[in-house]
Length: 279
Image (cartoon, rainbow, N blue to C red; front, side, top):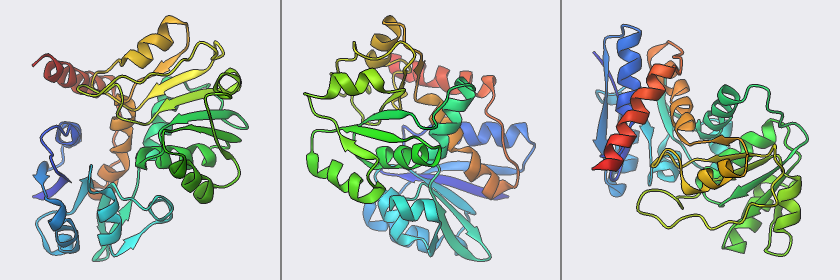
């Protein structure tokens, strides 16, 4: 029986087994997908030995994505640009790595808002970490013209400018209102607003009425940030869609079937998140 897994530290919170085992059952594939707690000191060894192990591949969650990039024998262009791997697979005996976070975000957006136009538009990103990098790269690939960054640490913004070029610019308190007026997409890529984390304090009254507001946090499903955007009439996108869509390519690489993100799957994972939040 084929086996795949997700590795992280800690790993109890991961919904990846629910997602992949739903697809395995739906497509009648004799395989299993598990959670595996791997300490940071053991990540490189786990991935290096993957081809000789019981697993045909794995997902990688925090805090291991950068370590996984260093550990794979071959990383693709996307993973190389981000310096992070979230999906590991074996091809011709070689342990390979890719990153599907950016494409997961775009697929989620397209699924929810098929007519939404990104080309030549301005986006604003809150945060400058690994998720921000993945989404910035994907947005630039979609033809977004400019991306403003809101982040506490200016050095991280300068790193993004070096990595992605002149389309990236810093948003300060003095120019935030003007930038938000002209932006088509505002995305929170930080953990602020997640259960147990402080809320995202960002004034968004100057946003245009058609600007889409997205949050990659999915616990809770509707963050206070999204509630505020919804109250003022902006379309919103929660983080659950990104979680589901980023899983698609890994499943296809391991099991040879491109799975569909269905309303049933969305309801299954949403129900699990809501149940956990009540505990």
